[in-house]
Length: 206
Image 1 (tube, rainbow, N blue to C red):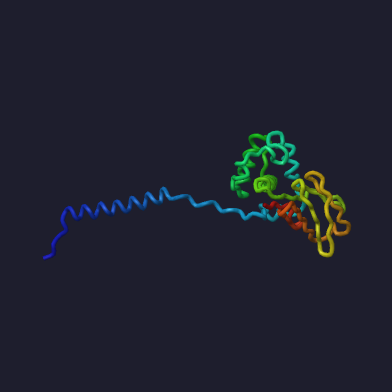
Image 2: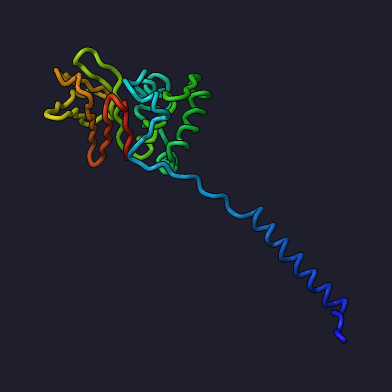
């Protein structure tokens, strides 16, 4: 005749099971949140393919000088060290820029304009380089770049160095202005940002 488990044995088994379930539930409730994906540095991907072609409507550096320089200084000179050590990726920077433009600047940005400004700010946070293409007038191209950088435009069979003054660059491409692809490269020390126009219009790199 089999012996039935005692009351104490059954109670102990039930308590053990309850403890295990509670522990599992607690782990699910309190486990660390997954880290957000990090956007690779050196390349900024435009929001949508339909928004890529052609020049920027407005250069982000010009916007910064017009709306932000009074508080933040020339090209971010008044930013604190926490800005440079913030570990920002593109999405984090977009959220920060969106809030600052709505509140302090009183000039909201959205869509591509927000993304391009975030890309420029990311180049500042990483002490890198930004370059953008803002206009084409016949054979003459112009754009913006991190001050101090050199800008080169190249195509199959040729190239030209742009004239840089402050954060503005200009270059006369001659017949190459109609080339199907022109590579725009900005170099500042060991930093390099590059994009291929007209498929893209800017690049931000650490």
